[in-house]
Image (cartoon, rainbow, N blue to C red; front, top):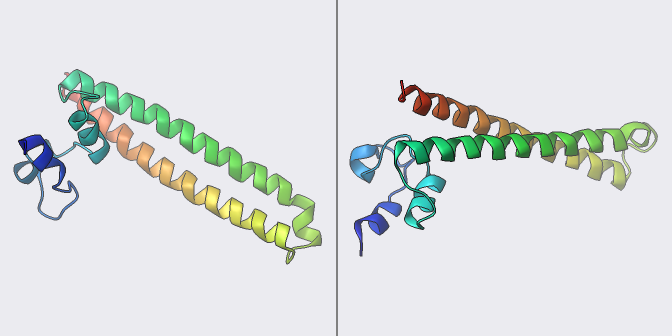
Length: 126
């Protein structure tokens, strides 16, 4: 078994697992490690910056998608919620709003972390 395969089985978020335990830098995320193991990326600085930039774009799109979903569900609720708040269609729309808002907050959180990581990676260029 190659060392890279062994490294992929050590969770990066494991308590006490830092760069020494995993053999990779502390700011390497699991999806990026998996992409490296699968040969889809490298771990040089330029590739890591590119990976982070792509991640920012994906998360911005994801956040916008869920924001649109929540907005659409809120618009659909409008008068229906006033007339039939306890009806199944209104309850399903409320659930869709809650679900979309949760997914949007998760995407926004991931985006904030990724933007911060990208800023640190770009700061290493200077």
